[in-house]
Image 1 (tube, rainbow over the protein chains, first blue to last red):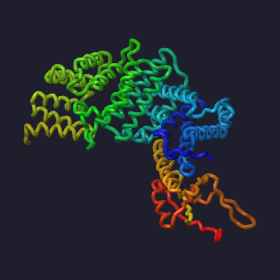
Image 2 (cartoon, each protein chain N blue to C red):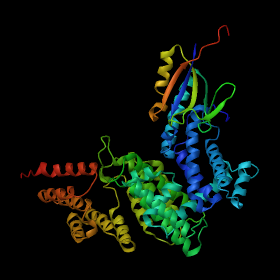
Image 3 (cartoon, rainbow over the protein chains, first blue to last red):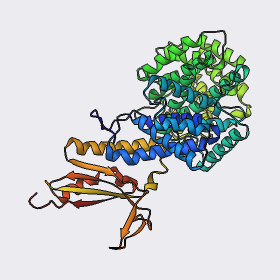
Image 4 (cartoon, rainbow over the protein chains, first blue to last red):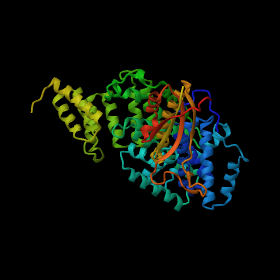
Amino acid sequence: MEPETNAPAHELVDHLFRNRAGQMVAYLTRLLGPEHLDTAEEVVQEAVLKALQTWPYSGTPENPAGWLFRVARNAAFDVLKHEKLVCQKSVELGVLVDGAGAPDLPGDPEFEEQLRDDELRMLLMCCHPAISRDARLALSLKTVGGFSTREIARAFLSEEAAILQRLVRAKRQIRIDGIGLELPRGEALAQRLDSALEAIYLMFNEGYATHSGTELIRKELCGEALRLAQLLADSSVSTPACHALVALLAFQAARLPARVDGRGELVLLEDQDRTLWNQALLAVGFLHMSLCAEGVEVSAFHLQAAIAALHASAEGDRQTDWVKMLDLYDQLMEISPSPVVALNRAVVVAKVKGAPEGLEELRRLADDRSLQNYYLLPATEASLLLQIGDKDGAARVFREALKRPCSEPEKRLLIQRLAQCELIAPCFY
Amino acid sequence: MPNYMLLLHGNPDAYLKLSPEEAQKALQKFLAWREKLRSQKILVGSARLKDDVGKVVRGAGKPRVTDGPYTETKEVLGGYFTIEAPDYDAAVALSGDCPHLEYGGTIEVREVVPVPGA
């Protein structure tokens, strides 16, 4: 029996199970080999289940993570024995199970270091270019993040079966191509890092976007993306772009508490109460902002982080350095042009040069097919029309925005802005 | 004060679909409930019962052993808590907010009969 601790016995570190589950899968996959990823996942789930069935009666063990690791490791050893997979792997594992080898105990600094390395390798394995883009995200969340298929499906507003299929395909790819946990070198490493950064960026956006999932699961997704970005940035393979991504995500995440008001309504950046921004996350952002400046590389993440930093360091919308912001957007359009970046740039053009110039920029995007269903294009246009006093035009374009897909809070915000136009210039139909 | 045994019956599969995060949330509810009993100093004992090796022995003289008592249904007796309570109703009330019930389980509440004179 585990001795029960005296300190608040029921307290567990936030996300302990989820984070440790990811680590255990990475750790066991190293011991068992990537071809046994499924086994690793199964025994980890078993260990979690066993904790849930045991601790209510026994209380929390002294070292909860140690308990989980031991149970998962023993279960893995049993699977190997049962499947008669007697090989070098099972011998190594046997030593650990017997306790004759290194302690491998969570909490031990050396072991924790090893676990971070395991997680890193696992993340880079999940982001192998041979695995499809969508699957990289899902696989990273599943194996490194400790999310369940159901949670991933909920976050992506997708069917659980579809996510499951994506995962199965990705794992098959890992087996077929013999993708392993070795760290690639040189150009291959750079590619793999890019792929991982992209996956983390998309993971964060999926969480940050107001169009999908429940508030809770989206927040968790943002938190996990930030954690993984930090894992990369603090690792031996870190690059300035890794720090830039951490900075960008930390700045964005810092604003989350101010983005929704007490009634659950969306608050635009310019109207946000900046005292609600998370100071600790802003500090993380500025720290990594300074770290990413090392070296000559200027990635798209650098520019996006610099844009976010400008917002973060301004006291308010009026105090924002819009001229510098425009320069950053110009650079971003050069190295990573996209219609969405152009749309955001148009807003900044309006701030610097005036609404008519902003509208001019938007007109160039009007025929862009990728923005045809993007409500922010007409919503932005309507806001600028309102600024130049064209209330009828603004009302018309806000109505156009309402026809495009958007979340309920976004819809309510549009309706509210539409009402503002009509309040001043009533239009009867 | 009399002792009561709270026998937790349930289907262990009820927890199978929980993600690690959900499992932790469920566990935290259990641990908070357990802590409540402990801090009131009414928790006498508790133990989990293994649910995969249950055997039933029957037949005096020539005992026959059959698989777990619950092979027909998926229900198993997962464990018990022994608590002190002033009366049966109080014991039932203390069971009432056990998270086990939230996850589809049932709790059998039985009074332990003290040995006379002990």
